[in-house]
Length: 450
Ligand SMILES: Cc1ncc(COP(=O)(O)O)c(C=O)c1O
Image 1: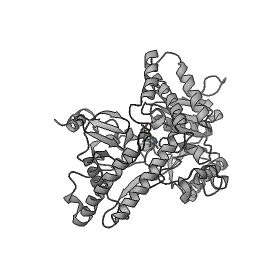
Image 2: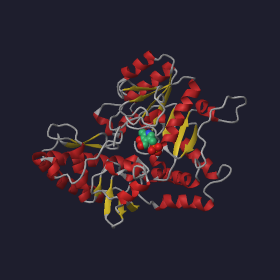
Image 3: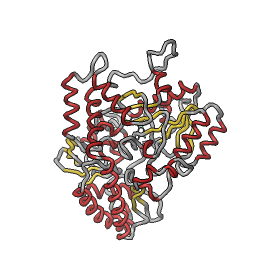
Image 4: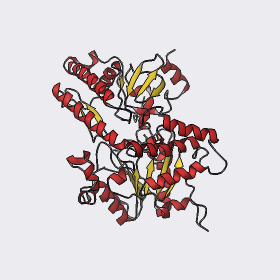
């Protein structure tokens, strides 16, 4: 029996994350992986792949980084989980607060979904209001019902769980102002990612480091995040940034710092500890302390409480990851690699006369590749073909997540493969994609039916 069959027999979805599922990859993707080191992973048959998936963006230093592993193992040897707070729990909190300018306090958890849900609860608790606004363009905030019920996969969620979730358009302030007009004094918080491949500042120099300190740009209407922050302040609503993907990439202090804003609440996860499971909710003291136990007669808010929330190996790995980032200037490496990859990718597609059909978008730190058919419509079939052909050349590229272990050798290997794959892409455009596609097309995660 194939690993795919075995996995799907035992695990609904065949994996513990839908984006790891077989429907997200071409047919020739490795069905099961055995190990990873640096920028590479190996399957059971000892095939070695250069990886751009990087554990759903949780690995930014490289798989099995010795320094981070050692820090985690030290904590495991100390006991890994205690009955009262551990020393590393305090040290990790100090490290987080020191690093994230907008956070006076922090609560750790295991998953990103836990902390985004907690941010919403806290916003409701602080403001006494119910509604939360999120951008309709952002794909995912939580596995909890409040978010899932806004997607096509509503089955099993309580019918009114999305009743208090409002949608606006990222980058369009008027769409958010309209919501505030429609629901006056009722919106507890506005939650958004600082940036995706769509950025809050629409200028070409977005790649350049110097925009981050240019006050005339950052603190002006040119910066969508700054406008949202001001609007929230004006309306008595909390400004919440979800840094699950931007955190530990745009800047070590986060996307909020990069874009010159100070959210009331901020969430992190994914790359905090190079693959060890940890997430964080940070924020201003007067909001966060609603979850405290030491303010006399305060009506209590049950804010994040879990048995494994302070698992010591992840906290130890987190502290070491921050040290590693500072010592090696990791974010700068991620930016440089991304910019080079994007420029070279687009140059190659230009050389193959495919510039309108296959190209990379977004800033170097948050790239996306776009695959289009003959009609210039976005095509999952062509995307599947592209990923299939990259896998034949031993490169896993379901999306683009870069790590510190991606260097010149990896860039050259990628560009050589791309040059080949673009030839096939071109043939598929003229002869039909089905002639070259060896299995079913990948499918969107958020679809109503299988
Ligand atoms: C922006 C964003 N927020 C929240 C989450 C949820 O994080 P987790 O999968 O750790 O629960 C994700 C996960 O992909 C995410 O991309």
